[in-house]
Structures are given as structure tokens and as C-alpha cells.
Amino acid sequence: MLYIVGLGLHDEKDITVKGLEAIKSCDKVFLEAYTSILGVGKERLEAYYGKEVILADRETVESNAEMILEAAKSHTAAFLVVGDPFGATTHTDLVLRAKQEGIETKVIHNASIMNAVAACGLQLYTFGQAVSIVFFTETWRPDSFYNKIKVNRDAGFHTLCLLDIKVKEQSMENLCRGRKIYEPPRYMTINTCIDQLLEVEEKLQEKAYTEDTKCFGLARVGHDDQVIISGTMKELQTVDFGGPLHAFVICGEMHFLEEEYFALYHV
Image (cartoon, rainbow, N blue to C red; front, side, top):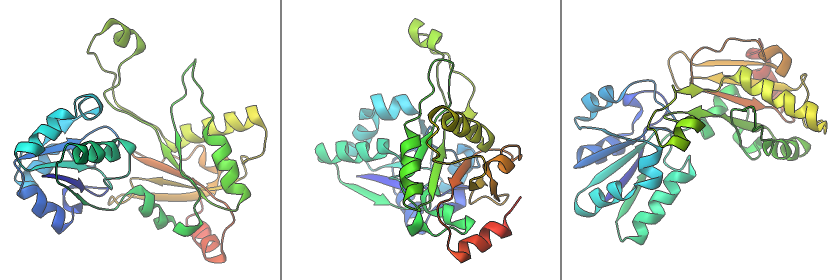
């Protein structure tokens, strides 16, 4: 049996009762540790769940998933995911592989940024396609998100921007040399996100948005120190939102109640 368990957004106590019962019944517990982060370390999870928690990085999940699947074949295993289990395609793939190998699976859902973003006051059914904003490099400055934002805004929809996380990443030199040396973790800020968005707008000039477009910046959603601030891109570009994780929303057409929330959180 393989349980895929969502942990929610903040700490060890965000888990559902059903999720906690599943974990306590398991022989092996794995924690996915690269698509998102909790506000606490795995030691807190182990103390609360009463189980050893094995960290599963990108390499384990994407290249060595057999370790997880084998544990589920012979025993009962849990794969823990920050947020909701289906917040990343990697987890969808793991469920498919488990089913293909005849492993019984059960998914236990939880809150994720995909629904908790509504804390800013924008209505979920007025969101269009979410986009990912990745860190630019000197040689790679992708802009595939731009057309998706334009389609959303042309239709009057809001756009949730999911900001890049770099955990246990190798430099190009270390990767080429086969050295298992990893870079320090990096978490994109709203400020960097806005800088990159405006750079792409300046390059493509199709007016998907401007520095005067209304937006929401959200930090550490679901945490006790959650921050939500609204403003134009220019206004939010220099705001200090504090530590990770950050998310960013580009507004489309707003209902009068949404406008009231925008005024409530205005910088």
C-alpha cells in the first residue's frame, strides 16, 4: 500500500486526521523535499508523527522511485508532499507507476497554494492558467509564461505565478564533472519575479501587463506570519516580503468585492 499524503502549508499540525492515521500505520515514510518546503524541519514531523521520516530529493523521486515503490510492495509506505499531493507532475507520475506495478494507492488531500491563494480576496473561479517563473541565468531567460499571462488577462482572469525553488541543485561545472556538490538553496522572491516579468514585457512589448498593473504579493501563506500586500508591480517591486515561500498574483478584471480586498491590503 502506498499513501500519498498532503501535509498542508505550514507545520506538522497542518496534516489532516486521516493523513496522520495513515502515517502512523506505515512502515516507511518518505518526505518529498524539493518542490516545496514546510516552515519546520523533518525532526518536528518525526516527533509529531512518531515515525522516522526519510528525505526524498529530486533524484530519488524522479530517477530512483523504485526505492519508494519497493517499500510499498512489501510493506505499507507513505509519500509525504508539502501542500496537496497533486500540486506537481512528479507526484502524478509516481501514482501512475505505482498503479502500473499493481500497488494499491490512496491519496489524502490537503491545502496548497493553488487554493489558499484565495486568502488575498480574489475569487478562485476567476483565475486562469497558473504559470511558473524560473530563475533567469546569463544564458537562459525563458519567457513561455508570457503568452499564458496575456491570454488570462485578455479574458479578464487573474494569474497565479508560482516562483522558482532551487534545492539540492548542482552547478553546471559540478554536473559535467560528475561531482556530487550542491549549491545552497535558493527561493525566488516577489521582487525578483517582478524584475523578470518586466524584463520580458520590455522585450516582447505586447502589453500583457505593465509596471502599473495591479497585483498581489503573498509570502508564507498559511503560516502564523503570513504576509499579503497589494499594489502595482512598480509599488511591490521594492517591498520586503521576508522569508520564503513567496507567490505572486497578476490581477485581471476585479469584482467590486475583490477591489475592496485590494484596497484592504494596499501597500
